[in-house]
Length: 271
Image (cartoon, rainbow, N blue to C red; front, side, top):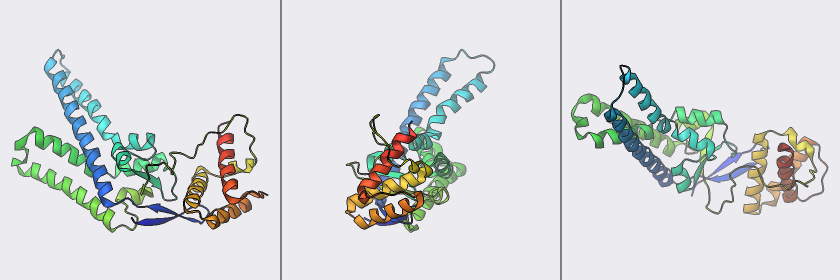
C-alpha cells in the first residue's frame, strides 16, 4: 500500500496510507448506487404527486418547486455527508477511507464545498443511469448520446488524475488542498481532536490555546503516528518545537506531554 508523507505545521512529516484505487472506485460505485436509488424513490414520489392532481392554475410551477426540493438531497449528498461525518460519505465509510486536509487534519467547510463544486462525475453517472434505465430509448438521438459521453469523460478525467497524481488527488482535491487517506477499522485515527476530559481536570499548559485548530490536528496526528510506529524521536522533536513556540517548561516524556496538551486543549476549549 502506498504511503505519502504529509508535513504538519511543525515541519514534521506524518505518514498516511493512500487508499488503493479499487477502494476509491468501490466507494464511488456505492455512492452512485445510493444516489441512483434515491432518484428512483424521488421519481416515484414526484409521479405520485403529479397523478394525484388537484392543482390550481399554477400547478406547473408547484411541480417544478417540488421537483427541485426532491432533487436537493442528491445534489447536496456529498457536502452534507462529508461535513457531518468527518470527511466520509457512506461509500467512503464502508470502504474505510476519509477526506483530510494536507496536514492530516479535518478539512474546513470551505474545503468540503470546493471539492463538491468540482465533483460532477458520480452525480452525472447516477442521473444518466436513472434516465437510461427508466427510458431505454434515451440513447436513440445524438443529444442523449453526447450527454452519456460527457458523463463518461468526467469520470475518465477523474480516474486519470487520481492515477497520475502523486497524492491520488482529483482536481477538486488539488484546489481544495485535501487528500484521501486509508483508515483502519480499529479506529486508531479518531474522528475528531476531542477526547473526554473530567470536569475536575486541571489544565497544566493554558498556553495551548495560542495554537490554531490546524495546529491541534497536527499534534494529534503526530501523537498517533509516533505511537503507532513507536517513533520516540518524532514525538520528541514535536515537543521541542511546541515548548519553544509556547515557552513551556516541562520535564514530561514526549508522549505524555503531547497527550497532556491535547487534554488541556479539550478542557479549555469547552469551558
